[in-house]
Amino acid sequence: MKVAVTGATGFVGGGLVRTLLAQGHEVEIVVRSASSPAAVELIALGARVVSLTDSEDAFSAIEATGAQAVAHLATHYLRAHEPRDIGSLLRANVEFGTGVLEAAAALSAPVVMASSFFQFRHGVPYPSSLYAATKQAFSTIAAYYRLERGLDVREVVLYDTYGPTDMRDKLIPLLIHAAVHGDEVKLGAAAQPINLTYLDDVGDALAILLSTPSPALTTIRAESATTVAEIVAEVGRVTGSPLRARFSEGARANDQPLIAGDFPIPPGWVPRVSLAEGLSRTIAWANATR
Image (cartoon, rainbow, N blue to C red):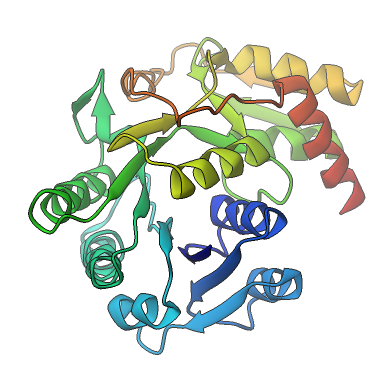
């Protein structure tokens, strides 16, 4: 089928595009710049590009693809915000996404949209930042399109993801960089739980949600969380050189948002890549690109 993907030049979006192309789907990526390195790589793999002439013109861009399904993964993430960030958060996470849903409704195309575990606490909406609040506001807008416009919107809560090509300011890239360069790394509480899913497994799960009738709210996550200390030890084991990690046990572990809720996983999906295997692949990529 033909799938339109927003956020395709991001880590998760790029992984999904590669999965869809490998499965034989036709993929249209909606990007601001077709000349960015990430977009160029996806074009070389067979993706087609629809460029945004206006960063807020999501409706026209999605409608132009004629897509049979839409993956809306574009987001503007901020751990904490300043007053000057309010407008950009609303434009990216609410206004842009609403244009995507409006276009999908015009195309009668199902939409898979990514939500954040920071929106929830034990299954109940509980935004822990302004970023999470904008995502929650967009979830409410999606409910309108689902209930009043009849749009098949499939919302998926993403936990932590990792894998090759990950350049984000996240735990796994930080640990691998420290392991590769022999640096000491400063971390928070050793017992903080992290729920990690390898990029290929995430792509497979999203592809299922795009092509299979699914519940309105699902989640992509590993069966169980792993503590930061356990992840540090595993990175050291895989690299053969224990990490020099300094934990701040007095730091308050931000573990409440990590218990988002007991939402169902995509139908028929099971993570296939273990943490050890996923770290091995990611470290091998990091070593090859040094």
